[in-house]
Every structure is written in C-alpha cells, then in structure tokens.
Image (spheres, helix red, strand yellow):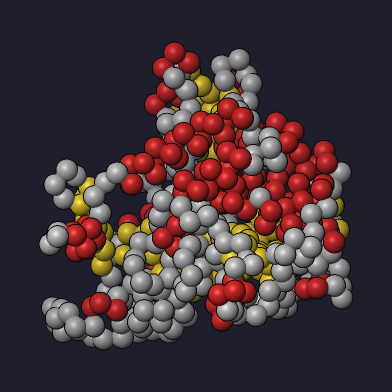
Length: 474
C-alpha cells in the first residue's frame, strides 16, 4: 500500500487518530497516537520520535532519541477505540536514519533478506498455532510476606461442586477433557466466534477455531500462513484482538504457557516452509513424509540448534513448566510424522505439494514472534547450508510412542533444556548461526541474555507458595 493509499484510507474512513506501534524485546506492543490532522506524507518519511530509554533493553538515557518508521503494508482500523483510529506497525531507526539493530521487526526483515541472498529460495512461510486460556477471574501477588495466584473459570473441573447462585448447571470440562466438545460443555463458542469476526474485519484470514484440551477455557484460533514478518505482524494483531474481545465479555485471556498445574499448557506450534517463487521446496513425493532433502536439512538445523533456539522460542521461566513429559509436551528433540511429543512433526493428512511443511511444536506465545521466527529460519538455513542430516545424527524419525520406550532407549533421545538458564547457556555457546549476514548481532545476544538472566534470577530467589507446604513444619 502506498503512502497516498494510506492517506486516502484515513480520509475515506473518517479516521480521527493514527496509532503508531512498535514491539519491544519481550514482544509487547507500544504506541504513540497522533491526530489524523497531524499525519501527512512527510510523517511516513520522517517518522515519529519516541524515548528509547524508557523501553527495557533498548537504549540508555544518553542515547534515548529513537524514531518509529511506519510500514504502510501493516495498517488496520482499530476495532476497539471509540474514536476511529488507524493502527500502523513501525520499524525502529536511530536518529541518523539507520535501522536499529535491537529492533525485533527489523531483525525479522533482515532474516527474510538473508534467505533471498542465500539463493535457497525467495520466501519463507510461517503459520503459528497460538493457544490461550480465557478465564473469568485472575488474581496474583508477589510481595515480601505473601505470594499467590488464583484463577477461575465457569468451565473449570474444580468447580463441579461449587454452589452457584441459581444452582450449579454442571457440564464442567474435565482435566484433559476439553478437546472440541460441543455446548453446553463448551461455553466459549460465541466469544471465540466474535474474536474471529473481529480478526476478519481487521484483515486476518481465519481458518478455524475450537476448544483446546485443558480445562478452564483453553482455546485455539488458526489464521492463514504468510511470509515471516507479515505473520509476526498478524500474530501481534491476533493477540491484541484476543485480549480485547475477552475484556469486552468481562473475561481475561492469557497466552501464558502454563497457568494451571496438572493440565495441558498453551503452546505455539509453528508451521514452516520455503518457496522459490511459486515452487514449493519442501516436497518430494515418495520420500519419508514426502519431504525433500532440503526440508530434511532444514529439520536438521532446527534440531541441531534447538537448545539455543529455545532461549528465543520459549523465553520465560514459565515456558519450562509446560515442557515436561505427559502433557503432549514436545520435549524430545526428534522428528516424526505422527508423534506429538516430538519437537518437529511433519503433518501428512490432506497435504498437497504446496502445503508440505514442517511443524516445530516446542515454542510458546511468550516468544517475541519477530525474533523467534527469524531464529527458526536462520537455524533451518544453517542446516541447509551445512547439509545437516537429522537421521544420521540420531534425531529420528521416531514414529512410535516415545513415552512407552524403555529408560535405556530414552537415554538415546536428546531433550529440551530443563530451565531458562540452561537454554541461555546454550544460546551463549551457540549463536553464530544467528549472526549470519548480520541478522542478529553479538551485542543483541549479550543484551538479550542479560535481561533473561535477570528474569530467571527474580523467580529463583523468591519464595514459592508450595515451599510452605513442603517445609513449614520442619
């Protein structure tokens, strides 16, 4: 979309405000709003200034001036504001006009540029399946003398015996009993449908929605694949709509990977493929799961670099509460065409040559999509460049139930890191594939690791409520 088309859209829709947005290292959006009367063609040339020192991980106060440069291909009309507002995603530049090397969106674009320069293909396509919970109530506190959380849902298994005003109507969702039930067990059909309606109006192509496995309102909505940066933009829009539609219904949505103990967590399974123009490069009819050698090398790169990659795709301490065996968690660093506990799964049902793809099941939605998608692509490209054979390295295929293997057999299978600190250790030891072509910089990695170390330390040094159950009577 040209600048003039954006200005026409503002005029034709009586837009009163234009909201300029950027994304921080953690993957959270920030915004500055201008009256539409202050927005003209020069705005898209000069950008919108902001204070980078107020954003964690960006710049010190002595270098605080930064600029948002609007991307005219990323506009949408905000569905939640009372005053007609047009939202625009931006890249971050320094005052001298250079792309800021800690800007997640610019990193995603540089990864796409590296793909094109590599000669492997022209486009990488991504499709995340981002799961979430919809709760009726959430409360939490972490202080000197108390620490707790409590969430509630009308669907929750723990509410089968609760006496409600007017009586308990039953049909609660059992633990691990929430996969695609109909009403009245599924109470959230309408709220998910409203989320889909709003997404469609905002420009997302939504393919389906359904209740997910866990009790207490776990959900999934799938939107159509696109190129790397565009998909990251779409995921930011997706999360924005999910959060705000839930709020309109008097509920609260969370993409936290493991908000409940003892039931499935929320992942973000990421489907990937590479094309050269219109030609799909992952398909080879008759090969294992119809995967081409190039696709197998891509898998090899993902699995070889997975411990380091997980520092970016699962970047929270809570991520590793989900990555435990027994809850369909993809903890095994292997590939398979059927096993959902494998880190990489190859979908084979109703797949066409253009639909041939791999699915990396380990990530979750605490990941910054721009950083995590870029890192996945770079790991895959490194596998292609080095012709990493995942079978020769013992990564599979494993098409049996891994949970039923003997302890001796399981010893041969690599697992994901057990903590955020372990993943950060792996990233510090293996990040050269990320700095290929200057996509990530060593400075970015060092800064990112320092921030995440502080998060891990903040959790590790605080008293956990369960420790009172274990140790108070000592």
